Image (tube, rainbow, N blue to C red; front, top):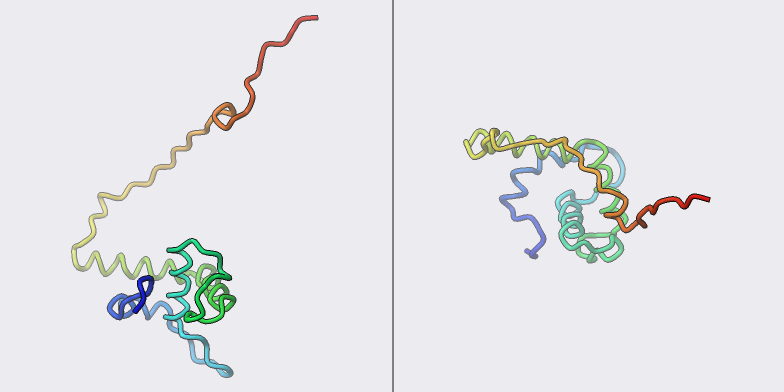
Length: 121
C-alpha cells in the first residue's frame, strides 16, 4: 500500500459507485487502480504524463477520470458518503453554508495603471 492509495476499508465504502457494467470485449482496467492513479495526480499536482507506471497507462487513467466527471460518478460518491455519515449521525447539515457573494477587485488591485485626469487643451 502506497501513501496516496485508498485503503481496503475506504475502497469498500465507495466501490459500488465505480462498478463496471458487464460488456463484451476486452476486460476494462481495474477501477480501483484507475481511481488511485487519479487521486495520485490530484494529491501531488503532477502532470498526467508523470503518473507512475503502477497505475497503468496515464492516458487510460486520464480518460477514466474524465468519464467519471461527465457521467456523475463523483456526485454519486459524494451523495453515498453523505448518506452514510448522516445515518451514523456524524454530519450536521446546519454547519453547511453557501455564499453567493461576489466581490470584484478593482483594476488597480490587479496591477493596472491608475487613470489620471485629462489635460485640457
